[in-house]
Image (cartoon, rainbow, N blue to C red; front, side, top):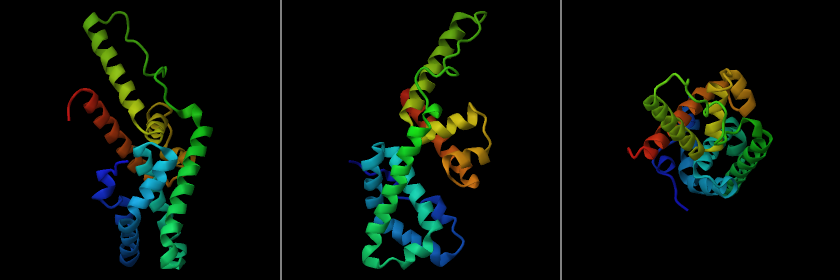
Length: 196
């Protein structure tokens, strides 16, 4: 099982945005010490590497939101506490996704499979069909969370507050997750087109 470079060489933005320097340092040290354990615990449950990365991010948010509890845990038990938190976050994610099946993408998604007008010339139709196929394939390579947030924003036209409530995240985090999802979609499309 590989470990993603994005987690290996960077600190989650939610940690970097913490205002209190001592708390930020504490959480950074926890993250550096336990990030491998966090990732592997999430990966065992969600299976997908990108979703496991998201679960690590979500767990960091949970650690920040419960910082006093985390600090109160004995040092010798912190790893077990954090791994348990990641497992619970991952299990909750899996359970919620089963309930939210109406928001999952499929290869036959109606919106993406719409054909151009018959008045269009053949060349435009071919280009359009290739673009649709690339977008479908790229979307299917994304994690369920990325597909869900992209669908909710661009196809269901939901506002940040509605998306946040549905995904059980903070409203000011929605744009961050959307940015990540768009970047992953773009990277997936570039990979499919043979561009790196």
